[in-house]
Length: 301
Length: 301
Image (tube, rainbow over the protein chains, first blue to last red):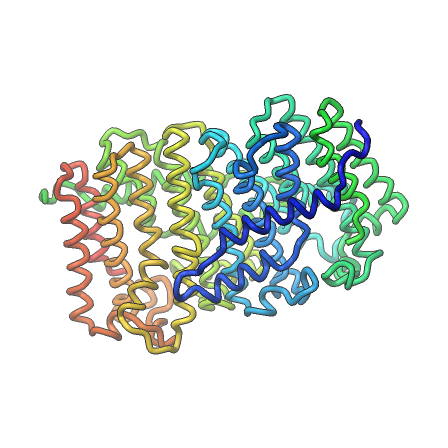
């Protein structure tokens, strides 16, 4: 493991700017009659957000190929953020988690109405695939197809959508740690793993490195959700930008509720250690990825 | 134009069976915890439906390459039906058109609840892209990517999703024929056009034939929606399998409301004639496609 060679704050800031600029370009100039639809998609997509998934995607590509052209990776990075944002919009709907606040602002349906929010989510999900399949830049078509396939799988019934289904089914029921872990893996872990896989494949990684990056992704996915559970207990609504204590009030199973706060922290640290261990054979070009893993463990919002 | 050389009833029946068998295979054996989610997707996907889009896709492929392997085309045909079905599920939601009946049965949210229906739609849309990108069969990756891109564009904000947005915005407002035509083009025309384009590309068509197939698709798309407007006035709820007279009760602009029933029929016929004309240079292998165009004009449900 190499030492701290990356200024993460600057790294995050520069990559966020890159991603935001690219997202902005994909969602500019609505055609006549669709101004409000584009406004709803842009409101949720461009209104803050840490850009964890796109930045993981970019950092994984750099870890594989340090001089990779960002234009090769950005379509996938942006598509991941579109998919993540659509999932937040739909999860917040009255029929689902019924949340009023997201990223410190009104949720999409509170701002634009329910029909507009459903359609903004549908639009963002579909745009993700349009963006990824627009084939004017590398990587080659075979690789691009493979990335689209793994992102679709991570986002769909076997991944994120399935995780949200299971999460809703768990509400108010006694759930053991094994089930909780499965829900987390699908709901959050799958797309985070796909984010680093997509970046690595776009940068031309071989099979060994793909396996290592996959383990890294799975472990930071686990850490991310454990910390999410923890922050719901320990952080304020203002810090989170969404309602704190929401899990407890919904009687949702969480790591803190099942194993206590101290053991929850231990497990998050273990997952991040395992993630870093998976990158043992990577050079210092994987340092941004390593710092991102530590950031995920230490984040307070 | 060649004469009636196709028994359309048999053709439809055999292609419906092929599509249903293939869809069935894509949505079999849910993983533990997702039984209800798969049941909701299967309920809407496999509970009837004319399979117009997948059959148009298969017929367009045959028109280009009469001995094309159906396994080359079926993933796209099935994906189109997944996308169509997701759009019906979301359009029927209480926040959108609020319909209780679809294909003669309860709508998905009436049967499974609203959250489950939103997620069934999301799952079907995402699965469509997973199915199309699974790359074990021809066509080559470049073609496959191009098809995915055009289907995504036809389904997203510039196509179907945008059309539904505009359709909702038109409710209860005075709308002229030009606006109505734009709404139709996006909401229904785009995916029907993409259906024949996808089949033609999968079968290896050249650029001239792609242009001809595109015109065919646009014109049958127009005819399809004109007839849909007409059936809302002239057919019964039992025939339609969904609520008849819904457009009028929602004060929606329709062809019959704007130009009268007789002129509506004339315009549907004109669109089908234009569609058939676009196929003038095609052989008898395009006869199923020609018969489908006539079927779209003459359908009574």
